Amino acid sequence: MKNRLVISLLLTPLVLFNTAYAAGIDLSITNETVTVSYLSPIPMLYINLTSKEDNEIKVNKVIVNRGNCRLINNCAGSMKFGQTLKCAVYQPCNIIEVVVKTEGGDYKFEPK
Image (cartoon, rainbow, N blue to C red; front, side, top):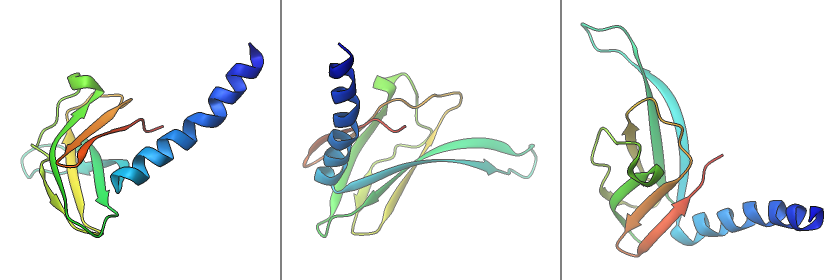
């Protein structure tokens, strides 16, 4: 049983890396503070999708935690190489899974 667990742990990052590479999308999560003139600073959580494809990638929808975390903005649009879509997430949300639906297929990320 112990050997199976070690093999599983070693393979998991490799699978995630290949999924991200196949999608041509890098995913990162950032915490930022937004200041609105009449309110106190508000902490915000963002999912950043960056294209690593020469061809344009059209993102149709982003689903966080199987729909259990809502996005503030639609987070749909097109990206060319090096461009980033920034998706604001309602707090609190512990992001475990992000599914990016594109015209080329659906891609699943499990950020750590």
